[in-house]
Amino acid sequence: MNPDTLISHRLNNVFHASLLLVGLGGLLVAIGWVLAGPTGVAWTLAASLGALLLTPRLSPGLILRMYRARPLSRAEAPGLYALVERLAAAAELPARPVLYYVPTSLMNAFSVGPRKEAVIAVTDGLLRGLSPREVGGVIAHEVSHIRHNDMWIMSLADLVSRLVRGLSILGQILVLVNLPMILLEYGSLPWLPILLLVFAPTLSALLQLALSRNREFDADLEAARLTGDPLGLAQALARLEHAQERGWSSLLFPGRRNPQPSLLRTHPNSEERIARLRSLVPELPPAPEEPPGSALFPTGWDAHVAAPRHRWHGLWY
View: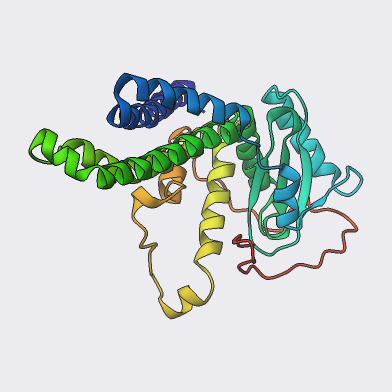
């Protein structure tokens, strides 16, 4: 793995993430200025700080219950625990993440909670459908999210985006209520502030989505550093992409691509992620294909695996 390429990618990701966070903050300050000038900016910043400190975090336990996740013990999955311990040590985490198991055929993994109390949940489909090498890449990706506090960063971005949306609605209401006075004072409508109030929620949402994609790229690079095997994660992403393309949609519409614009995706395109990972080891041939069915699968686990479907709370698994 070329360390210069890895450093270059990481610096680029840090720059983009900083730029996006500054953009979200600048949008919030601009809304405050439009509403009440310098006083509005001060109140907006104070409200942001207060909301950040006082807003309750969504409990990891609640999220896991929504997914019907079950804790995994070391006796049930010794290989998986050894893998997580090795990656957590390499990432210098303050505590080893706790493992949970989600009984669904959907191939997925996710992490929740702060660094000291992090949880990594893996699905039945992921453990059955990927090789140990590929599972290692996916777990390293989640450990990278934990190491970089990505859950907190995205929570911060979500908070700022919600404040922008709320202040934008408030500003539009004030404009409508005071429309006669505005026309008497200015003689015409000040279109620039009004357009800012109207389009600020859309701009903040786009910045938040771009930040999410940036964090995914950074987690990929950190996972490659932790495992020393970028091609393992690249192979896992290719298999996950193939699994998502199966089903009725691919039978009815063969060759159909995701029609969603790239600006509205929370995750980067898999092809782009795979290309970045492969660029870290340009001198090596493609990784050999390994049969799916991870040796890390829990032993003696009587799982009642369900087909993925939409749940009442809006999640799909």
